[in-house]
Image (cartoon, rainbow, N blue to C red; front, side, top):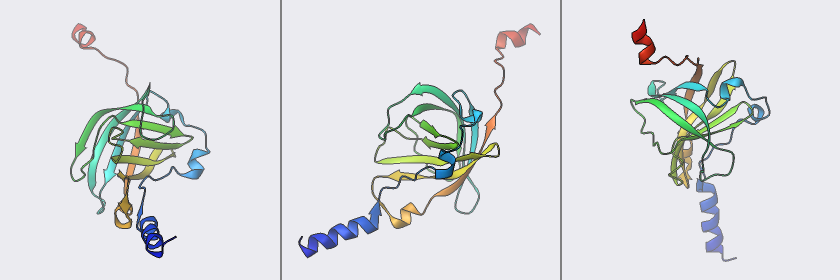
Length: 168
């Protein structure tokens, strides 16, 4: 192999990499908590680098299959509420994948080369993980920009309609 080609290949392999974190290995082998079943509601707080709130999300995990750019069993995520203060979160056909107690939410499955993900695990009844951009090729500095995210499951409320409220 030409030394110049080898140097370029080595530079590409060490300076750039796929920016798609894997689920926590131990969490993947644990039983799936009921809070990760389809229909579950979750509230997430995404922090910025200073520990302030970058965004909040309220989502419902659906049972509807969805195609993504990645392999695996992904289901649609319904984003019920979203507020951003300092994070530019790309959102396009959100999907989730559960592996044991590990949860991965892709917020932009329709943007294969420029997505955004939440990844972590359920422990002690809550969620702890990271949120970050997922780009096809990223510099080491970009890969280190993952920020913390925390979540809690929300109780499922009985369906109360307007008509039932008016009857009272």
